[in-house]
Length: 220
Picture (spheres, rainbow, N blue to C red):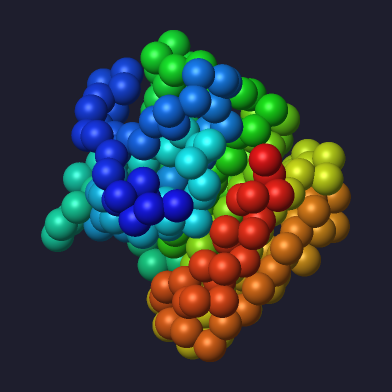
């Protein structure tokens, strides 16, 4: 596959949400990969991960709804170690509207809908999964965490839902111990968890990218 395939995309609004989008050339129903950026990111920030997704994927990377304090955007408000449930809930509605808009605009294969998030974006992917697990066919957490208050609520059976967790052992933003606890919690609730640690900081290393490429191919 050419480098052009992975770097070209259009910027547009879907349901009023600014996005970066890569549309497959195939006329078939598209598997959908929604990529959620981290705190102070934007719709371009997670695009590096698009190179792990083959040409079959319709990729949509939305901009979060809230302006972050210093730069970029945020999915929800928070204090250190504490997520604001109200703004997170509003972001879930925002994502629902986005996905509805995607399905109106493109032909999407509902049986192959994957949500990928980096850092705070992974928190949103987890929250979306926990709100209604049957909506997704896979979740990817890159350097992420499940918001603490959600781990204290009743978690529904996850029905063998595939979850990929990639985390750096040197991560000084979200310690790897949190990812390990999330892995154990999700496994207890019947998720099919693939967990990979790598000696990197708050990012995804080469080994993680290879595993992400393989995992996404398996979802096809």
